[in-house]
Image (cartoon, rainbow, N blue to C red; front, side, top):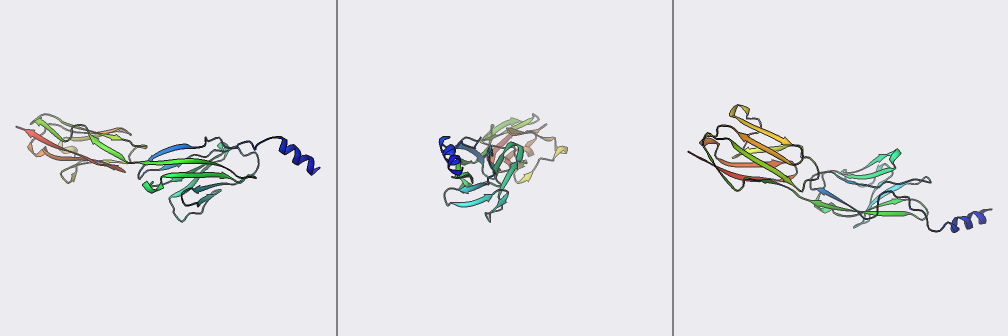
Length: 214
């Protein structure tokens, strides 16, 4: 009978959590980058997964549909993993805060994911001033701090000119994925002196002044 089923259900105690992702998971992403908020569930019964932004109770996604008019929000669904991650492109400082991943069970179940946005910064190790002898090799190393993803590019400027592709001038740039970019100039002359700037994608740039000594 239905009464017997209801009694049996109640004797099972509290509803078994269907979340694989831990509640209050914290995600750190860099400004301008991609934030991925995890929400993996074990669906024992058919149910819908929705995402809400906690600070204004904005409904962002339901299932695979995006409800927000903000096109930066998208659900990434991997069926066999029960994954319903929320992707936020071009993350902004104001995206920080709590997000709620909710399953439409009876009663509904939720977990909260905390998003923090950091600003990645470039740091030229030789800054603010570097003195080198004429004819020697100029080597500048630019390290990326607080980055959560590899930059799409790292541009180097000498004064206001981009020099990444100035091979004929003895200039070479080598990038080591996430952590650093190295600018090398062989046989430096007086005209190689001046201001150099390292400008990675989605990061605060850094500058150094090079003095070439005769």
